Image 1 (cartoon, rainbow, N blue to C red):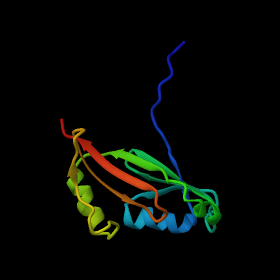
Image 2 (cartoon, rainbow, N blue to C red):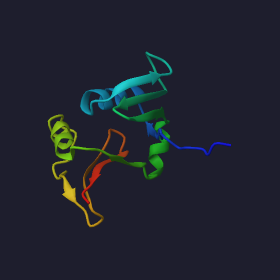
Image 3 (cartoon, one colour):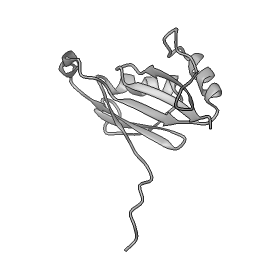
Image 4 (cartoon, rainbow, N blue to C red):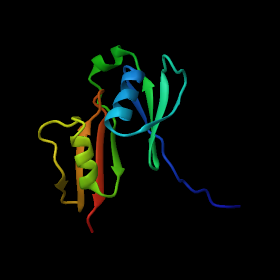
Length: 126
């Protein structure tokens, strides 16, 4: 029997408004829409850029009242400075967002999407 091979992961991020999240990921972060369960009022959709796909799922606003921590995604990339400059020109960062070298030998930058889901883009520097 052939051994199983894990080859992709599609994290699901909670959002309050799938259309607004789609707009952010497409127009600000350069993703394209992979699918949506309803073209006019989606509650579940996916966005894709290069080799990654992120799913966006509607969650009731009451869930945000609990103060639950949001997911943090770490996305491996090449040409980290180029991606940083692309996103900087789209005005998605907090003023202190910067590319930093870490003690764990990565170069990375991080910020939040519209719904406080964390996005960290990084590359190894070994």
